[in-house]
Amino acid sequence: MLRRTALALVLCATSCTQAEGPSATESPPPEQQEVLGRAEQAAESLETPGEANSIRFLEQSSFGPKLARGVAPAPVGTVERVMSVGITQSLTDQFALQPATPYDGESAQDLGSQFFQRAVTGEDQLRQRVAFALSQILVVSQNGIPESTKTPYADSKVALAGYMNLLSQHAFGDFRTLLEAVTKDPAMGRYLDMANNRAFDKNGNPIDPNENYAREMLQLFTLGTDKLNNDGTPLLDASGNRQRAYSEEQVKAFAHALSGWTWNATGCPAKGAANNTPDYKNPLMPCDNNHDTSSQTLLRGVTTTAGGNSTTHLTQALNNVFNDANVPPFISKQLIQHLVTSNPTPNYVRRVANVFKNDGTGTRGNLQAVVRAILEDTEARGAQPAVALRPGYGHLRSPALFVTNVVRWLDPTLDTATKDPGLKLSNWSKSMNQWVSRPPSVFSFYPPNAPLPGADGLVGPEFAILDTATITARANFLHEFLYANTAANAGITVDYDLLPSTNPELVAYLGRYWLHGTMAPELEQKLLTSMGDSRANTLIRKKKLALYLTLLSPSFQIQR
Image: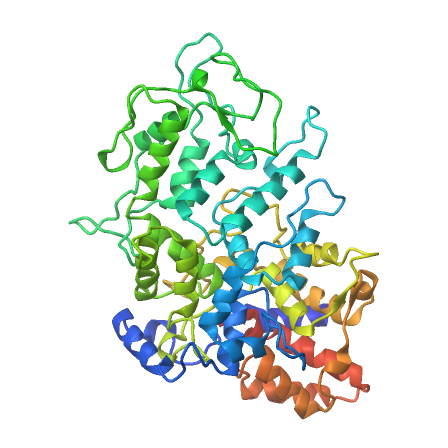
C-alpha cells in the first residue's frame, strides 16, 4: 500500500505542470495563440478527422472512447465511427439520440449506480455528458433535501431523479427554457427555498422573502459575481477595477419578484400560510396569495409590472437575467471547462459566447449550437492541442470521468441482471470526493475558478479535491479494479485477452489509443522496464502493470 501511495503521489502531484512546450508564463498572448492554433489545426478537417483527433473528441464529448473491435458498421460513439463519418456528423448523430431510460427515484437502485451504468453503457453519451456538466453549474444535491413522513417515497431520491431527468431533457435545448424549468423544479424548490417562499407572514404583514434562490441564480447559474466582457474576462471600470454584476438590492428585488411559488397541490394556501406536503414529482405552482405584486427594479434598470402576478413576474425576472450580457460568456466558459479545458483562451470563450448570443438564426441560448461550437472549435480539435496552447491546456479528469474513461476503454461486460456494477463504480468515484447526485454544496464538488496549485494565473477546478487522500484513492481504485476480485464480484468482467500480448505491442497500443499519441519516451521506457522485471512473471501481470502505471501517469490523469 505504501509503495502504491508513494507512486501515486509522484505521478499525480506533478501532473499539472508536466506538459510539452514552454512554461505557462512564456505562452504567447491570446491573439497570437488563436492565429497559431488555427494554422496548426487547418490541415485536418472536421469531416475527415484522424484517429488521435477522433479519440480526443470522444474524451470531450462522452464518458470515454471505445473501439468498435471489428464490429461493422462501427457503432455510434466509437473511434472508428467518428473517423468514418467525421466530427460534424458525429455531433449530429448524438443530438438526434433521445434520452435513455429515465432515472428512477422509486427503484431500489442508488442514483449514483444508475448514473454510472448509463455513463458506461449508454448510447446517448453527449447528452449525458452535457447534463453532467449542467448539474455542476445548476446545482442540486440529495444532501440538501430532507425526508418527509408525508410522502410515500424517498424524497431526496425521487427529487434528484426528476432533476437529473430534467437536465438530460434540456441538455440540447434553449437555456431560457432550462432556466425556467430549473426555477420551478421541486428539487430546486426545496434545496434553495424557492418552495413556499412567501412575501407575507402569518398575520398578513409584508416581509422580505428568502433570498437563497435569487442569490444563487444570479451568482452561480447565470451571471457570476463580476461583469464580464464577451470573452469571459472581467469588465473593468475607468479606474481599472472590477464591477459587480448585480447588487444586494437587486438580489432582494429578484427574491420579491420570484415569491409566491409552492408545492403542487389542489389549492393555494392562505396569505402567510404554506403547503406543507412536498410534491417532488410535479413543478412548483404559483400562489398569488403569497406573492409580492409590487414593481421591482431588476438588472439594467428594467422593472417588473406593478400589480403583476407570480407567473408574470417570474417570466419578467427570468427574461431580464437571460438577456444580460454576462450570461453568454459565463455559461459558455463553464461548459468549455467541463468538456475541454480549464483555461480556454479569451478568443475561444468569445467565439462560443457569440454562438450563445446568436446561433445563426437569431436565436439566443441554443445549447445544441453552443455545444457544437465548443467541440468543433479549433482549440478543441486536432491530434493534440496546438503547440502555442499546450501550457496549461486540458483539465484533470474528475473522479467520475477518471472512472468511466478507464472502464469504457476496457469495454467490460456489466452484469446488471443479478448484480449492481454501477454502485461499485459510484463508490470508487465517491472515495475520490465526487459522489454523484450528492455535491457537498451549491458550489458543486469544486468551484470553476479554483486556482491551479503552483501555476500563477491558471485555474484548475478539479484540483480543489485532489489531495494526498484522494490521490491515494485514485491509486487504490486502479489497484482494486485491476488486481482484486472486487470488479468481478460487482459484475464487471474485463477480457484482458483483447490487449496485445507482447510488451512492445502493448506499450504501443496504450500510447496509440489511451494516450492518443502523447506518450513521452520516458514513460514508454519505464513501462518496458517494469514489464521486464522478473516479478511481472505472467502475461496477465504484465498487462495489468502496464495499465496501472499508464493510468496513474500525468499523461492520462490530465485530459488534453
